[in-house]
Image (tube, rainbow, N blue to C red):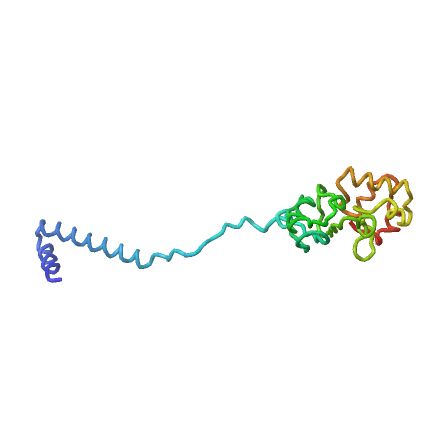
Length: 199
């Protein structure tokens, strides 16, 4: 501080050399003070991980999966979450595969699955007995024999044959409403047995 005071007195008395030194010194002090103030007042950089949100997820993104309940002759029966468009073979694979007693012909492994359906894999020799009926006594339109389909109200031999032909050509029924695609089945006929069937 004494040096600064001396320089100030000399500058005021008209010493040009000292005036220049004083200006340089003052400039340096101002620069240092400015840097200190900037460093002290600098906002903190937030820490952590950040995600960029582009709005709410679309309905399509939320519906990328379906749930299937697979029972019967699979190694680990249960409910499985599978991607949309999955086929029955994917559900069987998720359930650990077929058991040694499974009847491969009791299910169409190539058909596309629908959300919320139950798949029953029958034992060898059970296809003609319980393999085509779902739990609760409902008739499975994807596995029923012609005779079992004919037990439904309004379904005769011709319609039963058309139902079987449709499911074989299209990889099975994905919903009960698909029966309306079978020639000869309309809303009135379907409403007469819709509570008696399942996929």
